[in-house]
Image (cartoon, rainbow, N blue to C red; front, side, top):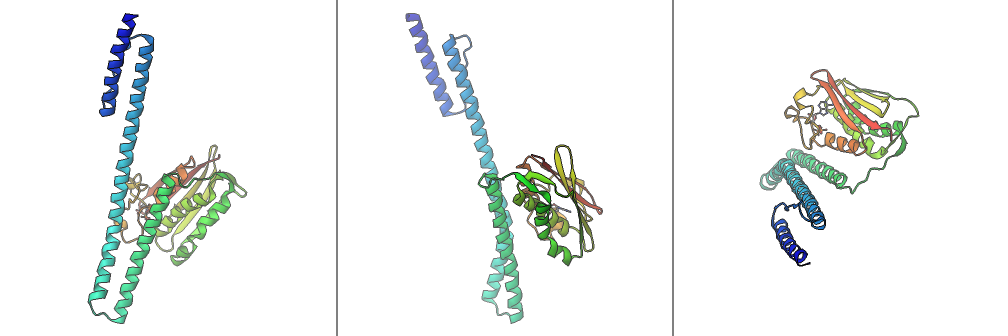
Length: 286
Ligand code: ADP
């Protein structure tokens, strides 16, 4: 009895020490495999608790780094439109300008404000998707309707650039997916196809039924994407250096990929400079 009391007292001391160490910093608990069964069981659980704590700590650090990079991205993205707005505003306030110039300046501020508005909306949408505030609802819906909603959004700019579109899909195809958000992802791909294809080009949308997936291709005859950029174009705010004459903020592909992966699918790209690009969306059947 005395022996057990002594053992228990020693174990309690060492337990307190270990707990203090764990709470104070990163100290790994000492596991005494030789100890009596009860004590060994507590030691094992302590080690598991320690591992969980470490995992949570890493996760929190990762989230903090992600948040920091998001804030720095936002500040980077808003810097230019805000600087432009300040300059235009200053000029209008401090210099006499003709009526024609005044209009020109106000149109320029309007377009910078549109850019900021679009950016903020896209950010809010992204963060709502990422934090689970927006939940995608997969239910059987006609692919034709999802496609139609996406195509409607690009008809006007397509006509402006005299780009023709051909769509080929199996009729009456129903797939379990979130139609509204999938439309948005497909719209982003179509919008890019129109933006990055010169006038008189072509866009082809084809839907194929595969064993586990439904594959939706958005192919264009545009300028293509260099192989070195094909993996990073999906990153938030990534834009090709040579694309700065085309409007955009680099969030379309990122959002498209988020929306599709949240439904258990994926997107890939095949492209050749000067020939065009094909973005393929793979949506699982269920
Ligand atoms: P944005 O179009 O606003 O720049 P995206 O995320 O939609 O942002 O696209 C990221 C980059 O990928 C674009 O800046 C462009 O360089 C490239 N890209 C996307 N789609 C195409 C396409 N169909 N043809 C050529 N380049 C493309």
